[in-house]
Image 1 (tube, rainbow, N blue to C red):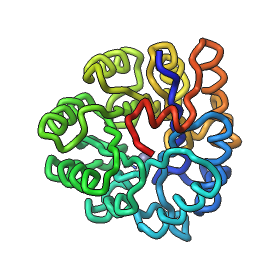
Image 2: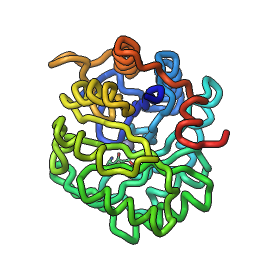
Image 3: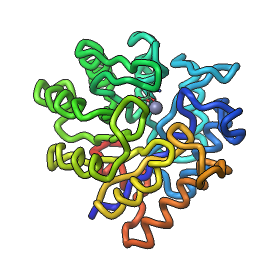
Image 4: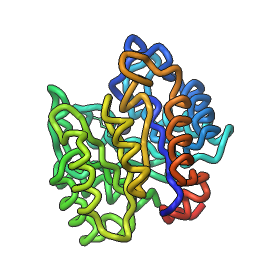
Length: 271
Ligand code: KMH
Ligand code: ZN
């Protein structure tokens, strides 16, 4: 098995300080948090921007500050969100890709998202993929529902997306695919053999799916974007606490944790 790539998703677009007072919001707070996660074994940081009021923003200037502050502290791979928050236009969502980060997310389909709809039409997907290609940004395919895999395979076939990509199975979003063991086994069997995968379990699904992925040879994403708890009813102290647990479990079962440069090699990113 390859070394495990741990992604931290420290902020997201939806979670609030009322839900977890330890949520980082400003570029400096996010960077410091990511640095602590890097020390615990994270090699990718999936970041979202927040404005001065803590509201989700795709403003390139906010992302520029986040990336600059992270780069001052460590060599973690920065993956910007193009999902943003539900309801944002694709022109708004794409903004951080202009900064040419190493990676960005690419959601390959539409799904319900709680009471909202997370919209990604065929045109949207091709638009995001084209902009990433133009800017030399490696997409990570975000899969919330089963139909998003055939959509991604079509994008690969039409060369909008490189043939070797990492798929991130985001499981447990209300309105999309459940975070069951069966679903993870099914989805991970549906992607091309040369591709890699990560699981991001939402809420209570985070830990059991992470433990499964460790044993299956997959990669893991944790962080407040997906889950704010350390255990049932206990709010996590920090994102680093969640990352540290994954590193510990992985090492216990014989999977070494990839450094950012090792992750770059696995993912095919030239530094
Ligand atoms: N906030 C969600 C609606 C991504 O970052 O690419 C979408 C999301 C996916 O978080
Ligand atoms: Zn996200």
